[in-house]
Image (cartoon, rainbow, N blue to C red; front, side, top):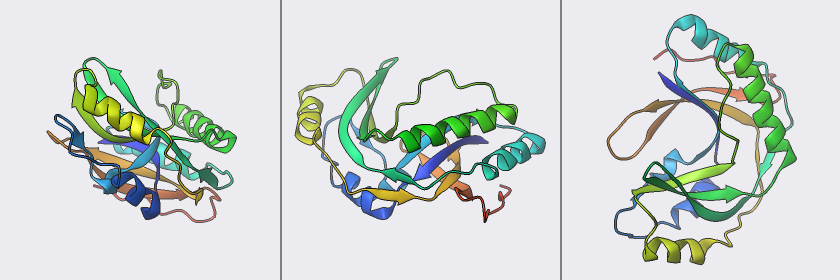
Length: 187
């Protein structure tokens, strides 16, 4: 199973981000229901014992609810594949939560994440360098701001590979208060 821990966005933010979608040649927009903020990508996880360790590690994380505010848009480019994204306003609480997730998952047996945490929500993808239409899209939305929302749980997602758009399935929710935990569902 390809797994990642994330903050699932409320519908209000998903609607706002969905309103940014435009017909731009070569851009494949992700479906709004897939919008999330990845805290830690785990990749392929095999074996029930490791799944149970991950479940236990995420269930043990306690933190205050995290305030999120969407802030600006941009483009990441890596190995000829580019991604359109929406950023988030800087947040010490978010940085602290992500560090707790990283520490908990390393203790559960996962290797350390090599990439630096850059909070963003992926909106779509395209091949190659940004053309003029994409540059205009970034310029017209770079002042994006949303209302502040409180996120009170971490979600463990299973990523299903597809040829075009992503498909993510929520496997378990972990309240940040750690008072209630929805057990991991076997797939």
